[in-house]
Image 1: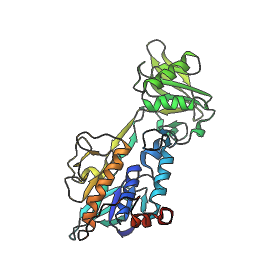
Image 2: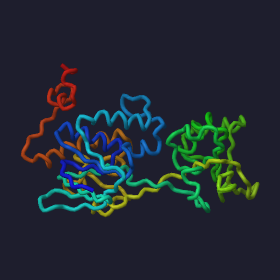
Image 3: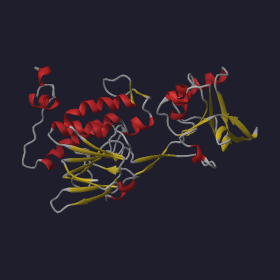
Image 4: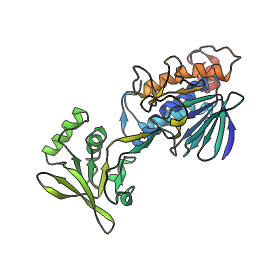
Length: 345
């Protein structure tokens, strides 16, 4: 609970939302961030904290968690306020021209600018339709890998045919007791290099590949002991496993954001490419949740969008001030804000 006033409310604390704090901070705008997760980093930190990312400029290889940690370090001088474990539930325009955002925890925040950086909204894993699945979730059935060490010595069955399934089959293979992959057909949507590596391990007898459909969990005394599968050749058969990792993708749920009156385009928020502003004045959208012609769903695109958004946000927060474009390398005032003035001298 609590009532706050700030310059900018950012919905979503993933990498793009975090970097927006930096760009806004350089222009003297304070931020409050609301995120449904219990920590910063968005999908990056939640779904693949240990998985390497290769396309962040100047960082040849960085994990989702490392990227999050570096962004948090970068925005530390601007003291953002985080509201974790909360959903942005209601948004309304006040008589004074500001926006008022309420969360499902009863927190109320007022600001002239709203930035929606919610990735694809709330991501919910697509689950296999197996009886009693919920009894094993979080114990022996998982939809993401947060700590690889948790799966050391396990007999793992990985379900799915995309990049996540193949990547984790290859990454967990060295530490698991056994890794088997199950997919309904012998055709994979993953990167060809990953598929080739998997097939080499299968050919060498180091990994099993089952072309079959999952039918049921097989438990002994409440503990997962295997999974029942079915295909034409074997009919219904048991695959021994004490852990199921199911990677069937994610279902996007915008939740209350869908009710903010933003003229959605296939569940995404249309914006212009000058300011990344929506059709509603004072509401911006950056990162994977927005749409415009030529949009690329890349973190680096979201960083660029955040920089341009901040230029227009300044005009709403400080309507009587003139915006001066400055470089962090040469501006002493920006260096003071970042706490690096002495180092730059």
